[in-house]
Length: 382
Image (cartoon, rainbow, N blue to C red; front, side, top):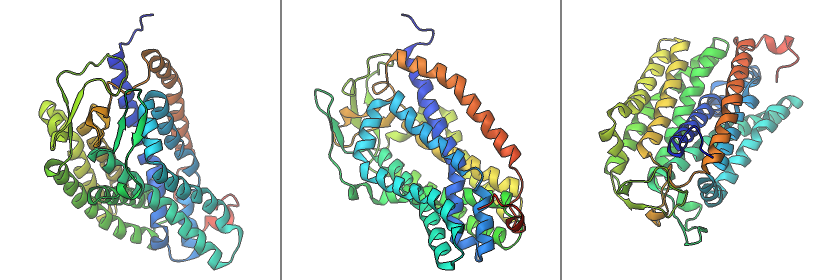
């Protein structure tokens, strides 16, 4: 059966959709986690902390849907990527899930008792639930950029040759800190929009400025590592974009500096890193001059730019192998079948707009600043 969209085009569409889902997760649940990481530092009294929690209290559960959608997309569209990453990075994934489990428990249990020690415990649990996943996600991206230690045998059975502690190198920790600073800036931008004006917003602005400056320095340092460090991969010869999915098909070599190749071929891609820097500067200006839309809009653009920089730099690679470059997973050799991608695209075209419309409607209905006065009048607040 001949499908209306060719295999190569479908692969590119699903690569782009995966990027959209990951960016959607970072933009929505990212500011939730950023607020959680800021919670113990921007709010000093119990009322202030409850007010901060309620800036995200109405939407955090819905925002986590993007995380589930991203994992589902990897499983359905890129099964080889799912097999390697979710098995090789098992302990890191477990750490993320353990931290994220603290979030719903913290939201639901914190105000069940008036004991200050009880509430302080859950406040720090919310901090862990925000800080740890963001750090680990950044470390994971760093490992993707430098290559993961895995290989496929002739029967396409995968062997992961690394360890949990091996995930943490100077470069991957730099990426983890960049992830934290980027989303703490995003969380600070959200608080300027959503929190009651006063001491909490003032503290968020100061901490956000620090996070924004750190983002600029770390993003630039990461670019230096990529350009001059010993990382990068390249496909030798012409890749068969419509060929069968087989990780051992084609020749891949390790080529330091190769992550910059795409910018030489497609000059427009420079927009992504530029957007990462410009968005951060916009957020800093918004925080400095108390312009809430500018601070949150700038942090959103910075998030889009920084994540897009990774994806565009690596294309067509999704998960390269440092142990056996020939086993590297690319857009052209790691996807599901032609028919599977087409059927899933139809489902996505139907349901993704519904998710976006519902999300937009929820934010419209629940828009407005969270205030300390509302804590005594609204029984539905945390």
